Length: 183
Image (cartoon, rainbow, N blue to C red; front, side):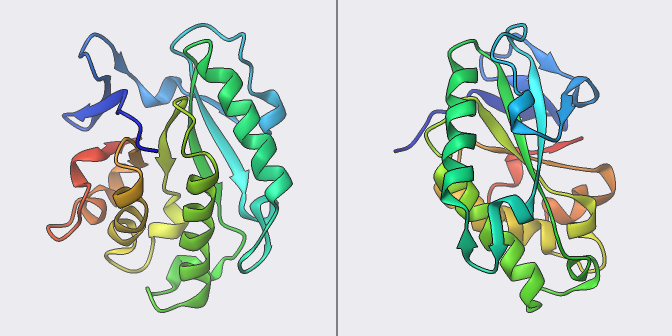
């Protein structure tokens, strides 16, 4: 199931696809518990939902499908009210900060994010994914790798990065670089 994009990026900023509203990433409502997602929030609210990797995956490639089903239900409730979420899977391993693209922790983290994206792929409330700085640090092309892994199946997503990680995320060989927004 392919969804149409509801957002685009212009001048490193998030805008509605109809170009009528610009969103300031600093105004995203940061929460770290999906039970705090409020479908009654004002329309056009965007949550930055931080989910610990350990909630999604107890060990490499062992996913908590009940948790992911609950996440999907919460996100489906948001879409009815025109409320949105940016998903940020918070890495459980400090190894990813200095690791290269062959590092098991780095590969497992991206696989976890891909699995999460697959489980919520039909939620129009999902604006995209935020790539944590601790993932991007240390090795060039990690942000581009993350995007290249998720973008082909989720072209509607915007990928949010810090200014420090922006150049890596839009490297010349990266597909989906037009969907990168600075947070």
